[in-house]
Length: 215
Image (tube, rainbow, N blue to C red):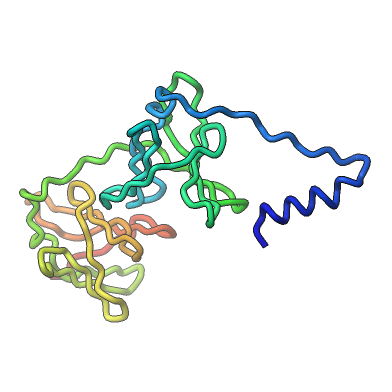
């Protein structure tokens, strides 16, 4: 049963109660162009998960950073826009009129919300990127696991004995992402000579796990 149906049935059942008053729906109006502009920016939900928000053609546009995919969002409330109606996912901006938004709320139905704060991502120039310097075997003492990174068909790819190969893409300077994997964000570390010596790996439930480059 959909939640909307359940709530409607509850309203019918409670309507006979003399003490029951149906809550009025909050009033709201469509966001103005200046309000849409105030929401624009890049927001980081957790390491490696960044959303690009923009105003184009009079609609708020949502794009996971680096994917090239863009979704025009329908407004559903004051400062709130639908990401996926079936999954009851939405985003909400609570900034005051005339102020630039510094964060957004990632709303997961009745399960709560997460805060994504505004950030600035410095893009990588693919022409100057040398993928070979990021290859090698990386080991985590904490997790007692290792990955081997190799360049396959022009893509930095992580190999693990128990996992499918993970294709990684450049996220920002010395940082790569493997969406949908345990390598959500990989920040490579360098020594004073500029050589890669390890990496800090983050995902939704872990942040900054140290990996040492063995060879």
